[in-house]
Length: 337
Image (cartoon, rainbow, N blue to C red; front, side, top):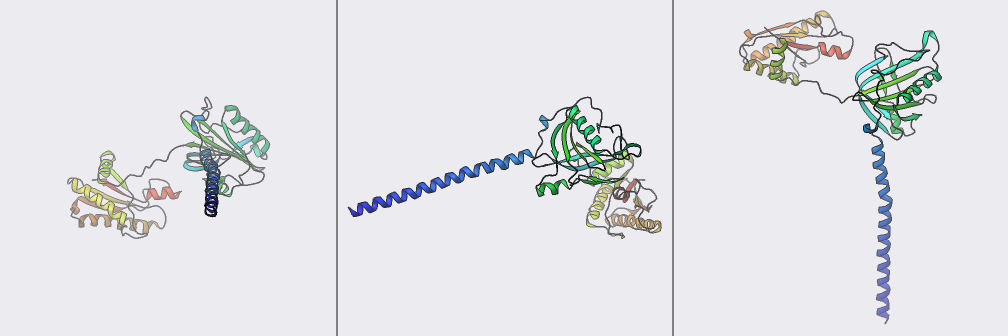
């Protein structure tokens, strides 16, 4: 009898333990599931459902807004203070940050005719305007408290020809975010003001398109057939005429072009930007084109089919006023003879 009692007691103990484990497992599953759902909802909220955004009609052209009476747009040209053909912008939706890319226009507002900037006039005019045309307001308020969101929004700082502009994390500078569609395109708007100025950042969303062409013999031939020349960016060591590895690859393509077209003759013409002295630039461009020419001759191309000449900074494609333009001016042209 004692043995039976002990066995029964042991069975009840094991059943109790199994029941407890199952109960704890069920509780764990129930508490984990909502957390997972919350994470998914938070991720979803970071996006803007463009199918639900208002499609606005008859609101004019980009940037869709003018200065109200009593205010002016600083350095205004085509309705903008600054414009960037491609930029990125961080947009706070109230729960998280939504990143967009595309054409960015900046409108910087000040008082008209020497008057001080009127923040109340700016806010009332601009917010009423976007509300009346039917744009969707995604958020209005102060900077978010989340440090990660703050760090993302502080990336909204752009340096243009006239000024550096961006969202400011200040106690007296709340901001608002709007979204709308127009003429088949999507737009995001960030608006902010303080006692000294008002700013509107409006982006026409566009997916980035890669425009860099691979330097292939076929592409060079197509360019030469179309315009009589191919424009190449061949990389050399700094202030030297030594080809870098990617420059060697381009010379291989020029060799393939000449080998496939035995009647083609080329003038290899070198150009620089305006950095440094004119004498050194011309000397360097001469040395570099000679490097290309003699490299091709060393591969078996008859040197009688080739000419080499350096022009330095004498023939720029663009004004040497930005790093981007200077990079475009540093080039080698293959001109058909």
